[in-house]
Image (cartoon, rainbow, N blue to C red; front, top):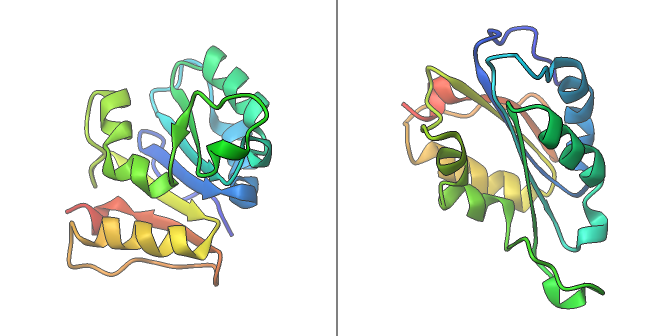
Length: 159
């Protein structure tokens, strides 16, 4: 189960999902994002096409009104778009590798300040596990089988 119960209120949260993989995060985001809260939220959302980016309108509005919230969608099939796609192209893990969170926040997510959640395509989850594992020798905690990895603690990963 995805919860924020054991994460300190001053810890930043990074939610990386593909397709419907954002669904488990939405309740937490709706509950915890407050315009004046010091905690930062970052959502990387990957999909094949723009019409597969569920919650996109809600997340763009939330980003507009909550200064501590960032939503970055990415698609991997821009050639199928009816209207030319002007956003990121590739995969969610590509944005991680490019340092989009660090560039947006102005600081690097570290074990002392951030937690990562992954949910969605198993290939993305495996790619992100490799990205995160390269920075530490610790193993990654998985609470949900197959499609979701809950609370990958940057304390253990980004050391």
